Amino acid sequence: MREIQFREALREAMNEEMRKDDRIFLMGEEVAEYNGAYKVSQGMLDEFGAKRVIDTPISELGFAGIGVGAAMNGLRPIIEFMTFNFSLVAIDQVINAAAKMMSMSGGQFPVPIVFRGPTGNAGMLSSQHSQCFESWYANCPGLKVVVPSNPYDAKGLLKSSILDPDPVIFMESELMYGDKMEVPEEEYYIPIGVADIKREGTDVTLVTFGKMLKVVMAAAAELEKEGISAEVIDLRTVRPIDYDCVISSVKKTNRMVFVEESWPLGSIATEVSFKVQKDAFDYLDAPILRVMGGDVPLPYAPTLIQEYLPNPERVIRAVKEVMYVSK
Image (tube, rainbow, N blue to C red):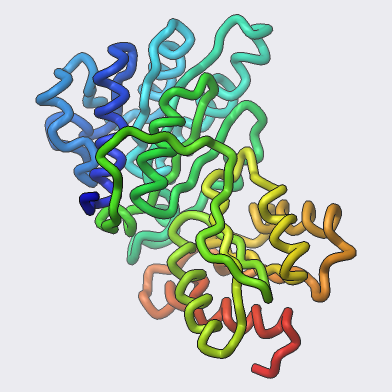
């Protein structure tokens, strides 16, 4: 099995599906001639041509709308946002058109479209280019929201997203595009809505998604040295959420800590915590804790970014708190 980068896994997913179905096309800023802002689409213009790998003006509302219209008429667009921060310009098309069209048309117009691109912090990009929108889009019925944490999952989940009959928000990270992992050469798919237990444990359940998985896995490794066994769950998709996987784990460990990069209010962590206390309250031996990003716009200074973001040390402190272990 070969080792490839996250960006290469995404490219393979798109290439494989586009070779099988000429209705699939990629559209966005710099995806063609420049090979993608993060080189995800490198070489795709040469293989598929300018009618299927399409450079757009800097007009997210415009090309998102074109994508929705194309999907309503039988095509299967992949719309790349250079960052989901820029998707705010196009959010009317995503929320009021793509997400609602199937319902408003009485099932006559499915919208099989993928909106993909990076989300969250990517270094010193400051407040307007570092926001997490997972919970925003997950709040909207009619959308599916996928947030992979590694190259293997990214490829399998993107292939499933491209084939899905509903609009899919596929959220990546600039900080993960260079991550490497063994990925099979043979074709595979990962179903949307199924979480993955990345590490089995008995003392506490750690739940996360996206690039925060690295933080959680690092914390779990340190906790193991202190004799604390942490089970790590990667949600992989945040709409739909695999509640059963989380609740089954909590029934075993009796404690839960949720780690998420986003702001605290209205977060995925808040939703999952509600569901666990509702359906597994009698199994909890401690209150559920969240390790979140700061409740402020993300600053520019590296020292303040470090203070803002979840890190292994904060996760370890939270775990010890729910286990009533002295810090």
